[in-house]
Image 1 (cartoon, rainbow, N blue to C red):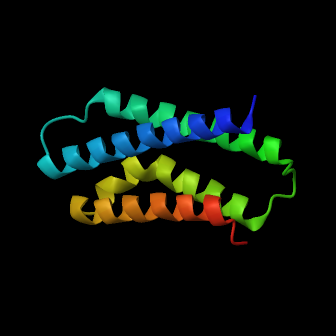
Image 2 (image 1 turned 60 degrees about the vertical axis):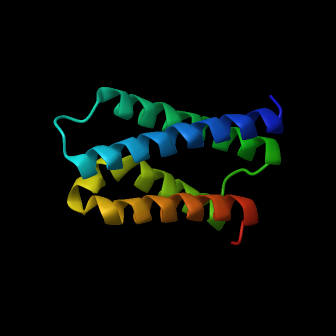
Length: 116
């Protein structure tokens, strides 16, 4: 598959992930009942698509083991974003918005600039 296909798949995964994080944080702010199951499903599908497309793009770019530092950093960010629904119970929802925005912007900046 082409690099462009993986790029589009990566963006779709990002949209699903950010939508689910926004839903989780909105639910956390309102504090109404049990968290909807659909948010967890969107979060998982978004993470899967990001992982699949990310490694597909790495293969297309010819990046193999050992990974450059920016790839390792993105994998760590991926793990933190994967744990975000559980971690978000530990802090206020208002701060959660800023943490989520910062993590996503940091991942985008790292993928675009490949600084290290």
